[in-house]
Image (cartoon, rainbow, N blue to C red):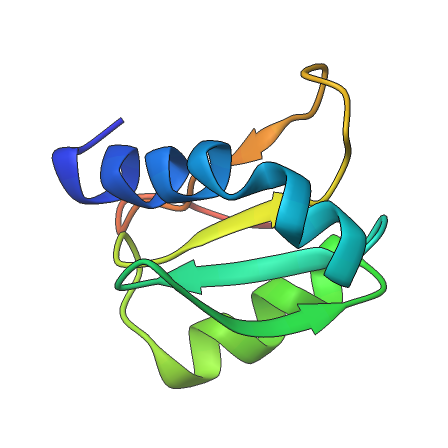
Length: 81
């Protein structure tokens, strides 16, 4: 994970309790250590994020209180069929 995305994930971890209460089970877009939006599905969050930000500059994270969540990282070299 790049330093930029690592910083976004650190922001999530530091603020996890607050974010989980505010956005329970939502998929949030984190960019510049700030929540830019909250969505019901990862796809919805991705579609919005990619329309507004460059790949590799944002993190999509599901707000779960457990540490079993998945981290979605999107690189500019990713190919979707």
